[in-house]
View 1 (tube, rainbow, N blue to C red):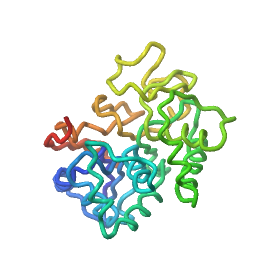
View 2: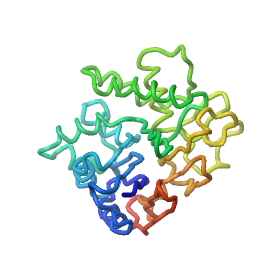
View 3: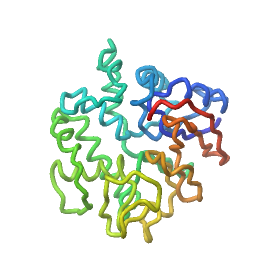
View 4: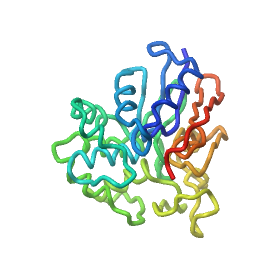
Length: 272
């Protein structure tokens, strides 16, 4: 049995199948951890979503920003962008089953035995594992409620923000979601910006990659994440960055959690 974490797939179904062959993945025997952004921008979002859903207990998935975008569009709140490849999912006969499965995925996955924590983008520097789990559960409850549209409407804020225990309502949920699904750079006090997507060194003064902040409360737990294709591989025994730019014609990568090692395959470019 092996447990493999795989970076952002974003509808690159053929590349996913190639990578699974390269790691000799066998459902029922092995486990997959998927860092989110299962869909969008690649050519086969529907096939990817169906395949991962059908893996059942063999796959642990956290939600990424593109997955949230799909849910918001399907709920009538978001709108499709020119380069989105979500329409086949929205038109699929099993659309509702797929969307219900997706919105019941968590924002955070933690395995105390393996000792790893997985999120899509990042974690607020002041949150320890217990706080992160509590705040993830707040958003998960909103996603699964009858009032999910109010959450989606708040989710699209582009304003820079900062965590405070005093935040309430949909603003609180939006900030929590930004940390888990959109975070790259932030300040030591937790103030973050969603505008800058480049590699470290491209950010405004005073901002740092979230995982480099001093006194980060989850520094004692190895964190697996994706989301940041311009970052490349980071493997320093504290954080493991898995988005190696499959969509951009670079690689799709898998990291073995049991006996740490990397396997990557070369990818065709779909995004420009």
